[in-house]
Every structure is written in structure tokens, then in C-alpha cells.
Image (cartoon, rainbow, N blue to C red; front, side, top):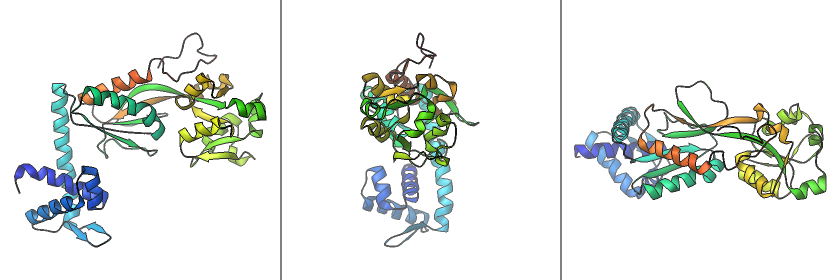
Amino acid sequence: MQSEKFAEFLGVFVDVAREGSFSGAGRRRGRTPSSIGRQIDTLETHLETPLFLRSTRLLTLTDAGEALLVRARQILDSLADAQQELASMKGAVTGILRVACFPTFGKRYVLPAMGELARQYPGLRLELDLTERLADPVVERLDLVIRIGDMADSTLIASRIATQTRVLCASPAYLSQAGKPGTFADLAAHRLIDKLHGADLLCWSDVLGHPARASNCQPIFACDDFEAMRLAAQEGMGIAYLPDWVAGPDIKAGHLVQLFPDWSAQPRARTGIHALRALRQPPARVTVFLDALRAFIGHPASWALDTPADAPNRAHI
């Protein structure tokens, strides 16, 4: 095996170990499973030891494979760090930009910003991991992870992108039929839209003043996707408690009606949207992406709603 190809073969080996199959690694690299299999065979021949135990349904690492996986990740990480450092010194927008964030936010705001970069820098490759989990930029070799909420103490470097404000909203049709709640206590008698798999009815206890599931409040509709919750509110299913970056444009357009604007003006209804990274000196692709994302979101944010606390002057983002 030529020495200059060894890093490539190690990368294929790591992908196979991570995906658990030749086909999974092939999809990740845009290659056929047979091509991936041949590279693993070549690597095993070169190292004179089997790296995987193969069966018709299962692919598992041998002891030698487990040992190589640790070393291979270290080698590939060091190479990637060196490339990023050199690229940042030159100010070149190159390589692969890897970003992880919530699905709805990614589709609405991150993807258009990436589209702008793709037009400006045709040689830049882009990867967007749409996930609800808390991705780790160090372990998963991500350039950025976009998180919403209070930031825990961490060695990661956070760049503030915007502000999220929670809003209560419902469709005009629902309010016409069910009546507009006059007080927070009235909300308990209304049909509520919930975030599925949440620890508590999507923070409804903050609004209702008690744990929602401990009362008679039961969601009429529950879903694990903000976009679907927004659509459910538009369909008149009930009252939703959503981020303004989800519901703000619909409220501005009149498709949804904001309830209790005073509530959204409180500090506890607001939190930051941050981009987290591991490198103190990020490569140029990260800098231009953050600039593109902030430009697409706007200042103030395109979704922002005037509230009694900031109607004359919007809150600084």
C-alpha cells in the first residue's frame, strides 16, 4: 500500500466501524459496498491481521480492530486539525463545513445560509446534521453545534447568533370557536398543543403555574417536531407555546394570533441561540458561515415580534 493512501484507508476503516457495515460507509462516502470492502481487505492484508469479524448480518471489530480504531481516530483528528489550522492561516474557505442543529431551525435558517455559501464557494463541502440530541463538536468532529437555551459551563466557545422568545399563539378560527382566554387560568380549560417526548408539557407549567401533567390538562395534539406543531395550531387544533422563530412569521402574516404578549416580554420567556465550537481560532469556513447565518436571520431577527417591553426599540440580539 502506498504511504500517501494510508490515511484514506484509515478513514474508510473508521467509517465502517462507525456505521457497522460496508453499505453504511459506502453511503457516507458515495461509494459502493464492494469498493469499501476491497479497501478493508487491502488494509487487512497490509497490516497482516483481520480487523473485522464478518457474518451475513453482523460486522464486528476484532481486538486488533479495536486497537487500531483508537489510533486511527487520533491520526485522522490530528491531520484534520493541521489542515484547519493551515487553512485558517491562509484565510481559505475550504474543506467540509459540518454543522448540527435542531431540525426545524436547520431547515428554516441554517440551510439557506449554507446555500449562500455553496454559491459563493463552489469548492466548499457542506454537511448538516438535523438532530434533537445534544451533539458534541469535539467527539463528532463538528465545526459548529447550534444550541438554544442556557449554556452549561463548558470548554466550548459560544457565539451568540440571536434571541429566542417563547410565544403563546392560536389560529383565528380556533379563537373564534373556543373564545380568547382572558387570564392564564383560562388556559387550563383550552385545548393545548404539546411537544412530544418533553419532560413537561413543553414548559406549560411555567405558564399555568403548576406541573401541567399533574392537573387535568391533556394535550389535544402532541408531536416531536416544531414545524408540525405550528401547522397544528394553524389547523385550529388548539393553543401552542412555540419559539418566535417558528411562529413569528405566521403571527406577522395573521395566520396565528399571539396571546398574552406581556408574558413573552418577561426574561424567563427568552433565551439565547448560540453556535458552539471547539477551536478558539476557527477555520475561515466557520467565520463566513456565521456571517451568512446572521445576515439571513437579520438584525433584528426577521421573526422578532414587538412586545410591550420593547415595542419602541427591539431587544438587541
